[in-house]
Image (cartoon, rainbow, N blue to C red):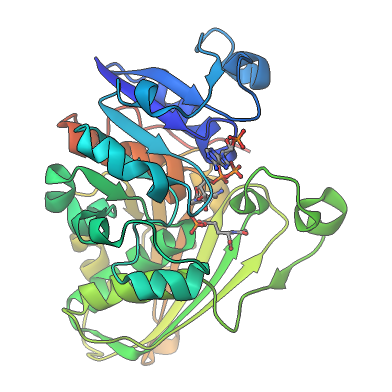
Length: 344
Ligand SMILES: NC(=O)C1=CN([C@@H]2O[C@H](COP(=O)(O)OP(=O)(O)OC[C@H]3O[C@@H](n4cnc5c(N)ncnc54)[C@H](OP(=O)(O)O)[C@@H]3O)[C@@H](O)[C@H]2O)C=CC1
Ligand SMILES: CC(=O)N[C@@H](CCC(=O)OP(=O)(O)O)C(=O)O
């Protein structure tokens, strides 16, 4: 049994990690931290976990975390980078659900996150945890940077086209919609029922911090060529889910896009390409680690439209983090993650 630590167990992604880990046969939660709820039983805070977890929240102390084989950070941006170097020195594996290790360039981190990086020397050893692209590197990694929710939906959607040099990479558009849980569990005016329900709005059009992360990933798929991406996130009145509508020009009009997408993902346990002409619903991936997508070419023209739907808390966060953990620990990749969606 591998011992697992979780820093940030009271947030939405932390709670989702616990939900998915309690029935995992090869790992055991050893420590779940919260600074504000120390001493409180995890199952008292989340009654849905009664009978599954008998731990109490503890302070995020290095000595307890250092007893673990692998530690998840489900903390706000900028927290993990202060604790991770010491854990790595102790030989512990780490999966960070925040953005601390996603951007390879420390100057880009400072520009988008507004503070200097605390351990720029570690950025190069971090592996970006998108298994469909970096599986081999994740297997050998000690530190994995779990992708953001929007970046997961957008990168997977563009992957087959860009990888094959079939997209006009100067003209990539990602119009993405998120549920409110994407903003975390902390109290915020924008997350209030009266503010977030029956309302929809774009935000961050001038520049969202996921823009450099997505661009970095797409550039890697394009074998280092810079890409021109327009990314527009929206907040929608749902609790969970991301729906990304992606547009680009296809460079070869003869290509069978449906076959391209099906073949690229045929061996991927968590990418489901729908039959031609269908549309993925966020409801169909709720509670699952699946990215469900469809590829369309309206009127057989040169513009391709890819639809990509995930659950922001699962494939967009906790589920993908566990997928990465399984790969890092040599456990079957889909262990404890192959579940059908919640209906309704
Ligand atoms: N929500 C989503 O859909 C997604 C979120 N993410 C990322 O995952 C991370 C967690 O997100 P989410 O669960 O939504 O966040 P929440 O705000 O819901 O929870 C944050 C957790 O971190 C703990 N925490 C806060 N500050 C510190 C600190 N300084 N030291 C230690 N623990 C701290 C909090 O507990 P306490 O304060 O009691 O210690 C709490 O348990 C974020 O970086 C987020 O950007 C990534 C993809 C999707
Ligand atoms: C709806 C909403 O507010 N979503 C968040 C993104 C959540 C996420 O994935 O953020 P990290 O990159 O920090 O991990 C946002 O736009 O800031």
